[in-house]
Image 1 (tube, rainbow, N blue to C red):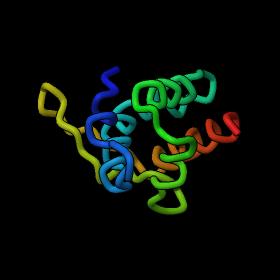
Image 2: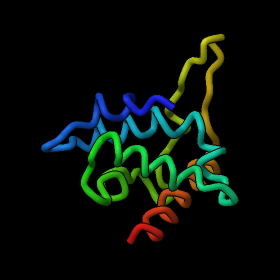
Image 3: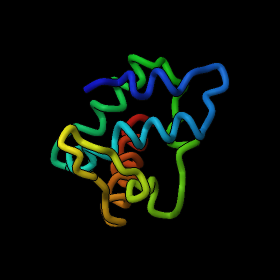
Image 4: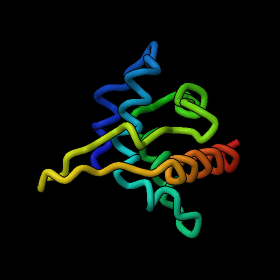
Length: 109
């Protein structure tokens, strides 16, 4: 995966929430099914690499990237694949992404 989507947009020392959270969504929403798979360590691995490449403060994304009670809203984020097909999520996918992120931070702390 290309983590530069996040590391190019989410920069310290201020780590602007709008830029960091948009970058996280651009990176994570297209692969939300893998991240939300609680049988894999995909979410944990993803955040390990994000922190490795970005050297972000602990809890940055968990504390800054909250949109509603279901977590991140991937529904509004549309990405064009190389074939021009829109990729979007359903509200239940956003809930699962939020759950995966929460589970990861519970494991870390």
